[in-house]
Image 1 (cartoon, helix red, strand yellow):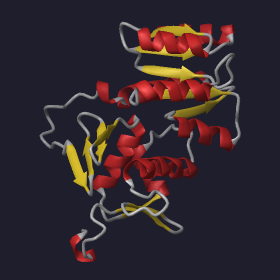
Image 2: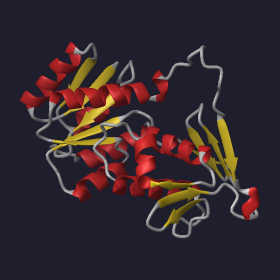
Image 3: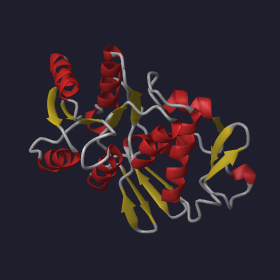
Length: 245
């Protein structure tokens, strides 16, 4: 596994590199955004994870995250920042990050999050031959086709590549079609146990999915809000209620 560390504080980046290598990972350091993007796009062996600071010279971590998402929607991005405000976290998630940790941090927790993200990355998922049950690879609703095997969403003929967590959330909705899901349930079922996220994070991800699949995100027809509870996914909003179960 190969990790890109985007951090301008030399002592911290060197320490992270050392500890990642002790865990058996290959680690590469980039001190600024330009270097990070160059190493990411020109790497002979693709990176499996990015650890990203937000306050960097030249380009902010937000800009780096957005630039990476333009070329790769799947690679996990873990933000590691001294910024603690909720709006900073919300902006990081809106840019496409998967997890957010604040400095100072506990090394065991960071390593746990790294392991979790790498295990959940679709490129590292392996089929267990002892489990015959196979989940559907595609899901169609409205003018949307979701291909979980290819990690793509096609809307009205245009194909997009959502982030790993966006795909996991969309699969969770599709597998619970018609059911009211509380934010707490979604948090437990989709996000890892050690994720530093809140129910507001779920709202941000739902907004991103709505912008992707809804004709009018301001008046969604598929991902519906349930006041005071959470969300309900409806594949065919024009069908009678008894046909939606």
